[in-house]
Each structure stands twice: as structure tokens, then as C-alpha cells.
Length: 220
Ligand code: HEM
Image (cartoon, rainbow, N blue to C red; front, side):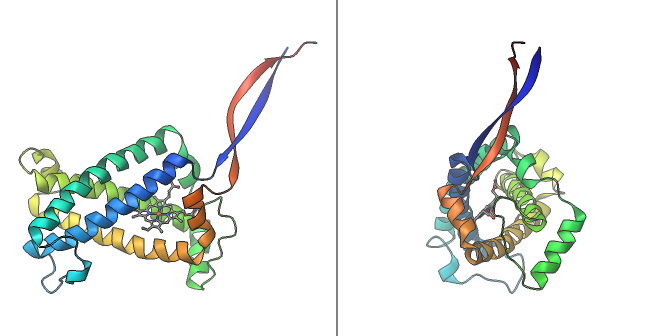
């Protein structure tokens, strides 16, 4: 006779590859945003909007462009690795889904009333899940619009997908704005709940991970 025997093992909340990819991504994003602000004056999107010199990475637009191209490789390769890891290990399915409408409403309501206690750092709340999904999609959009405006001839298919060169530039700009908005909230929340920040540095608590079901032969 055979009986199913669930073998439950544990793992860290944020395994090492996730932490490494998260912090490379954070650094690459900051390089991309600040060097992007250095290039921005070359083609202003909002006429009165300019970024202060102290916020720009690079000594002049040409130098900022070099930083932007260097950061791009880290962002694109590391981002692709994170996407593949999230999809193939089931991390995205496990951590970011499901998102229940009622949880979303309750968390937004709590946040608006400054009740942002994050008792169980092992679970993302519904708002976090939505924000992480939005920022992951924004990251993908930044890399693809970036490719489109960098090499519009070679990536003409991408340019048409975004509705033309100017529209790809606009999507690239607004994608940056979404990521900067996300970062402001994300960094503020991680400082308000430092245990989450420590977990993203050191791995956090161990959580159970049902790995596989083994069928053991039981002697009768
Ligand atoms: C630079 C400052 C940053 C800090 C201090 C920071 C901090 C953190 C912390 C503490 C968590 C875990 C949250 C929790 O367990 O409740 C986290 C997760 C996450 N962060 Fe950041 N982060 C930063 C930058 C970024 C950037 C630039 C992005 C993307 C544009 C990003 C995207 C994410 C995502 C997608 C997760 C979920 C990761 C997963 O579980 O797979 N973070 N971050």
C-alpha cells in the first residue's frame, strides 16, 4: 500500500538570490533615474520641469548618457533574471497572488487612517502586491521603451507598438514618474517598518515550503 507523505522544508522569507537581485535592481534604478534626469534637458517633456543639478548623475548630458547606458545593462540583465526566477520558482504566484478586492479596500482604508502596522512580515498585504506588480510592469516598460528610443530603426517593431517614437518617449518619461512615486512610498514604508528592511538584508524568518509529495512504500 502507498500513502502520500508531505515533506515540509523551510526556507528564508527572502532567499539570497532575491536579496541580491533586489539590491542590484535598487542601485541600477537609482543610477537610471538620476542619469535620466541628467539627459532630460536635452528633450524636455514638461516645459517648466527641470531637475536640479544635485539630483543629476553625470557631468553634463553626454556623461549622464554614459551612466544611463552602463546602468541599462545591469537593470535589463538583473531584471530578466528576477523575472525568470519569480516565474520558474513560483515566487510570483506565492507572494503576489491572489489579490482579493476586499483586502485591497481594507488595506487602503487602514493606510488612509495611518494604520500601517505590518504585523506579519511573512505576507505582503493587498496594496503591496498591487504596487509590486505595477512596478515590475513599469520596469519592463522602461526597458522596452528605452530600447525603442535608443535604436528606433533596429527596434522599429517596438516603436510601432508604443504608437511611434514620441509616444515611446512619453511612456518612458511617465514610467520613470511611476517608479519614482513607487520608490518614495516603498522606501518610506520600509523605514516605518524596519523589520521588513532587515528581512530584505538578512533574509528574514524561515517559512515553511511544501516541496514535494513523496510516495513511501509502507509495509503492512
Ligand atoms: C533603494 C531603496 C529600496 C529599499 C530601502 C527597498 C526595500 C525593500 C524591502 C524592505 C522590501 C521587502 C518588503 C516587505 O517584506 O514587506 C522590498 C521588496 C521589494 N522591492 Fe524594494 N527597496 C528599494 C528599492 C526598490 C526598487 C528601486 C524597486 C523597483 C523599482 C523595488 C522593488 C521591490 C519589489 C518588487 C519587492 C518585492 C520583492 C519580492 O518579494 O520578490 N525596490 N524592498
